[in-house]
Length: 97
Image (cartoon, rainbow, N blue to C red; front, side, top):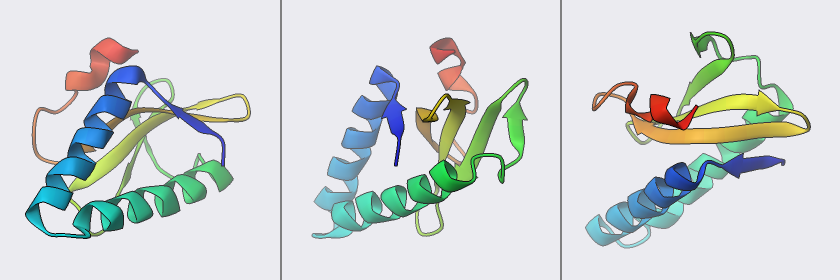
């Protein structure tokens, strides 16, 4: 699996892990597992998910959590621009482009 985080996205991802873990023991780990499983799918077939923003920004939703991986393809993998909440602050990550 070949992906890398935008620095701000990585910080937010880690905050989310901590948040879920603080709510229920083990939930942070479940969040990481679901994220990694979706990242494998994105890595294998990055064009499966529809373009969210032209020319190449896509959004892949997690199933158990109200979050989506916002990403763009890069040679040999993809860049995670955000792990965005599905209902809060849409497109606030645009400054990361």
